[in-house]
Every structure is written in C-alpha cells, then in structure tokens.
Image (cartoon, rainbow, N blue to C red; front, top):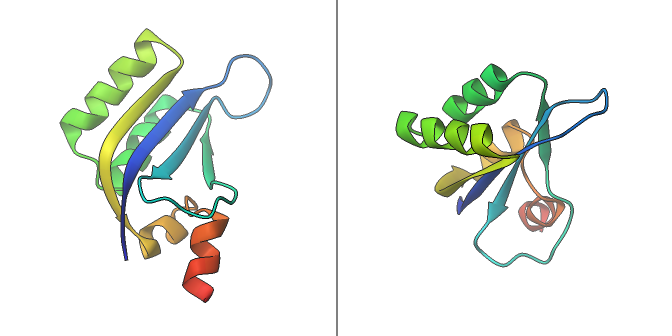
Length: 101
C-alpha cells in the first residue's frame, strides 16, 4: 500500500546521541502508535537516506536549507510503500498492526 505523508528531520542540540532524527508522518489518519525514527550523526547521512527514500534532489536541497536556517525541516508530499517504510525503519506501530490484520 502507498502511504503519502511528510518526512520530518529534526536536529538535536547537545547530548552525545545522534544529531538528526528522521520520521515519516502519514497524512492518512491512523490509530496512533509509535512512530519509527531513524537517527544519524552526520548531515551527509541524512542526505543519503533521503535519496534512498526516493526524495528528489531539489527537495533534499530545500530540506538542507531548512536545517541550516533552524533545527528542523519538512519534506511534504512523499509517497512511500509499506515495504519501504518497514525496510527503512519508519513504519508506525499502527501500520505494523494494520499489515498483520
């Protein structure tokens, strides 16, 4: 099934953990559940991950500009399959339950 939504990238400040957290927020209302998060230490890893997800070059540049200007970025209108979300660790627990039902 295709899932349309927004990819969000948030830059964490301080601490010793990963500097960037990437999530996918589907537009379709779900029954809630935890959101899958991918964590990266380097900006170039975020860029590479967005490419793997099939995000276009201009949208990636815009997301990086948003991150340079502040702590977060959004990439709206992204369509990902259930398989891609599972493979890349971005599925919600609600999606997992739906796929098992």
